[in-house]
Length: 119
Image 1 (cartoon, rainbow, N blue to C red):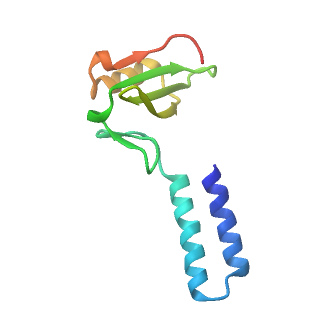
Image 2: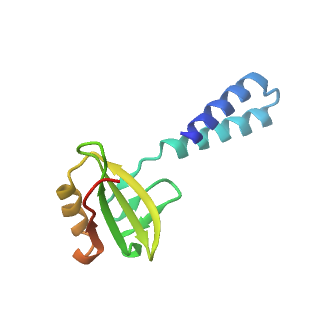
């Protein structure tokens, strides 16, 4: 959300104040990159967990995954760990069993944990 706000502010400032081609190019570049980072798709791929443009973890690098139900019915969080460090948190509108079945295609059963209860 913050990157989306920065992209809009950069675009407005560039449009309103940039006088030279150099400043226009720089301003539009910054606005475009912030927009790209803000809109980058997150989720599970067949080769990795993508939690953002700068946070892509291949399945072999992940040591543990926790599926945590939220207070909202049908929504579940997926926490991924590298070692003992939590590296990403994704929210899915999928059942726990669907998430677990998909994860078991890429990870061993002892790497996938379902946490019962709510956060």
